[in-house]
Image 1 (cartoon, rainbow, N blue to C red):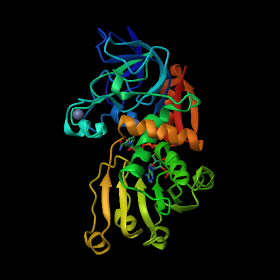
Image 2 (cartoon, helix red, strand yellow):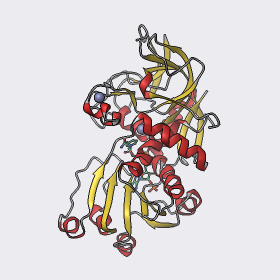
Image 3 (cartoon, rainbow, N blue to C red):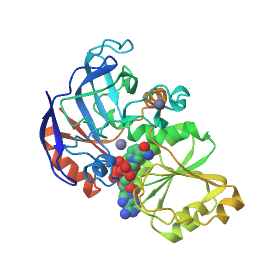
Image 4 (cartoon, rainbow, N blue to C red):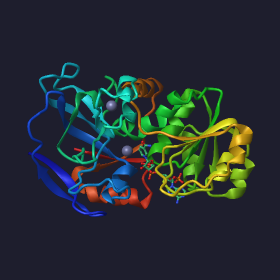
Length: 333
Ligand SMILES: NC(=O)c1ccc[n+]([C@@H]2O[C@H](COP(=O)([O-])OP(=O)(O)OC[C@H]3O[C@@H](n4cnc5c(N)ncnc54)[C@H](OP(=O)(O)O)[C@@H]3O)[C@@H](O)[C@H]2O)c1
Ligand SMILES: [Zn+2]
Ligand SMILES: [Zn+2]
């Protein structure tokens, strides 16, 4: 049996829950969970904000731990190896997206906490293809958040050819945003942090931003008109998106990874006239997660974490709801 923490209803507190994971599939691995980050998507799933949740729901998709068992067909991973697991726990491996290396775009992919149980547990299973070894020297305690939040903000740099000479901005300096500042700085960009928190401005400069702007002040956003090649939104709320489009240079891109539920109400002429783009993307492929881990290790990029023990899981969830964490909460054994 796997001992986990589950929500039993939308918005419910997490309670101890045991389940039988069944026989190991040939391509499965089982991970002894040592650390697991809490992503805002875990909250959205607990609350069934996206209509995807099935209860009991065991959240947790920023897992780091050691492999305890491998299926018969697993050749790339061994027991004892330290690995990470993110949003996806498996892919079909045969569709055009998978065959093209875009496993994160696979329409039959399996979500670690969607219709199956995730990493707020003593063990979690996943397909070997979705499990990535940690670089040898990477600290395990703070690595979990790289596997969802980290890859989500790193992957767009690869996908859209962000250049070191670009002026880049990040909206929302939370779990995802604080990693984005570090990645963009190491990438070589001039980095601006848009934050609604006065207190985070000084911290954003320490994390790698060169400038800060109030994300909710129309005059401040307007003062940045025509400045950025690339703006990455990590917020899950509605902001004045037309103002942000106005802050893009010609050919600039406003890219969404934050799961804003309200539809975008965008003026088209500012897109047409300056050939600007709007886009979105989900996490990243396993190959690009490995690339990101190497890049993070080389540049000393590390999630800034607050640690809670697993038995304080509901305190940790409440703290994330409060919007106060600096910057990612990690549950640790
Ligand atoms: N695309 C993907 O594959 C993917 C992967 C992971 C997560 N996500 C989504 O990304 C979003 C962020 O996740 P996270 O874990 O980074 O969340 P988080 O730690 O809660 O950070 C969100 C940040 O958004 C800003 N924000 C929140 N409420 C705001 C408001 N009313 N006005 C202005 N700014 C506000 C805050 O930044 P400031 O304090 O700086 O203003 C906050 O720190 C969530 O929607 C999550 O579901 C998407
Ligand atoms: Zn996530
Ligand atoms: Zn596929």
